[in-house]
Amino acid sequence: MKTKDYYDTDYAKLLSQKIKVVFPEFNEKSFINHIDKNIFGKEFFGRMDIFANAFEQYLPNTYEQNIGFFEKILGEELKQETGMFSEGWWLWPVSRYVERHGTKNLRVSLEFIKELTKRFTGEYAIRPLLTNKPGETIKEVIQWSKDKNVHVRRLASEGMRIRLPWAKKLYVAIDDFENYKIILTNLKNDTSKFVQKSVGNNLNDLYKEFPEKAKEIIKEWDKENPTKETQWIIKHGLRSTKKK
Image 1 (tube, rainbow, N blue to C red):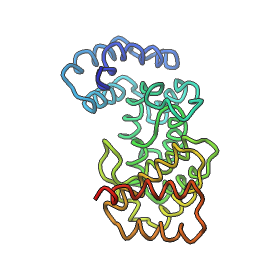
Image 2: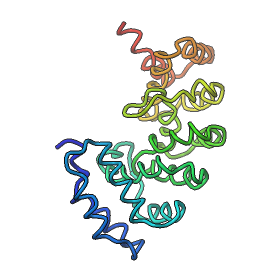
Image 3: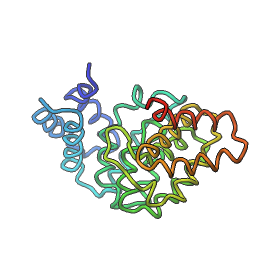
């Protein structure tokens, strides 16, 4: 089964049941009918947008109220590094809704994304905030890079990637390079391979776009008697140069 095929009418029924519990006035039947009429033949992000459209139409409340409903259906945090797409996959349309509307209330969105990423991922939802409200958002991301939760730390890196798969290029890493460097440096000794891979991918993206900036970071890290974690990240970040 292709990933897109999980998001169908049956999924709409599952999701609507969860929403109905926390929002009794929810028009479950109309929501499901809307999905059923529009989902056929759509590719992955087309399906995400259909669900986001349905949220806008059938959750006729403020953004803040709707986020409150979503908070109540998030469920338990992932107990391990894996599982974001195998266990948390059903939250992707919720992430799409936040991606669309998150700038309406930056503080509410940041707090929700932090909780979302503990069950799924916030790497897509955070990018419009980094684009449109970079100053305050990056300050929050710096704090995330020091969080005790591995998924939050990983998000601090993954959300900042220039070439995040399935997303438009994001150049906040260059626009606010000093803070970007702080975030990656905070993570360079992380013992989690999950985080290390993200930081290495960040460096790899940076090297493809702005090699001198990547070299600057690596040079600074090399001066500090790098740990085995930092050495692995650097190697992973430079893998594209070796392919050439």
